[in-house]
Length: 173
Image (cartoon, rainbow, N blue to C red; front, side, top):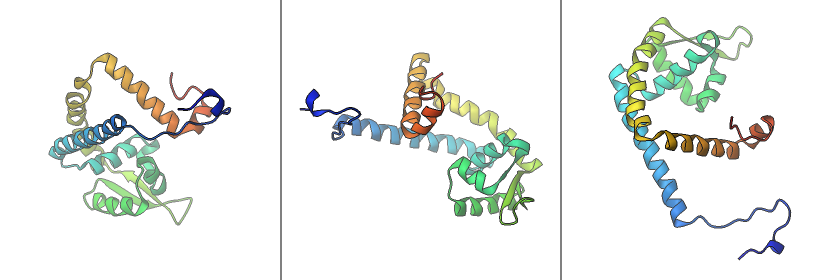
């Protein structure tokens, strides 16, 4: 047992993870994996893979529907080599275009094509319905608020520098 005298200012008490905490962690992994699998299966009806959709979403949200490939890799948290191979497949299908970067000859700029934008639009409505059906509809409004609070706490813990930038509020508004 740790007593008040054992703690110094700012000290962190370290303890082992409990069986219950580990079970919840596994439940989180299993549930998010199952959701990704179900949503990915439903997305395939649009002839887009979840990876395609992730790339098209990032490009559709980017200024001018274009990004440097390095920025895109960072935005979707992919290794550059994985992104490069995937972009090649998407380019052959006419969903994106890669051009040399005007400001840096070493970089490439990835653009959403008209066909890519159309494929993204067609896939988005059914994808949003699937998210609502399999995720949103499973939770009460109170559970949704609790989940938002939990996720914001995790983000603040994972990115404490962002917490400082927001005045110590941990991203909560």
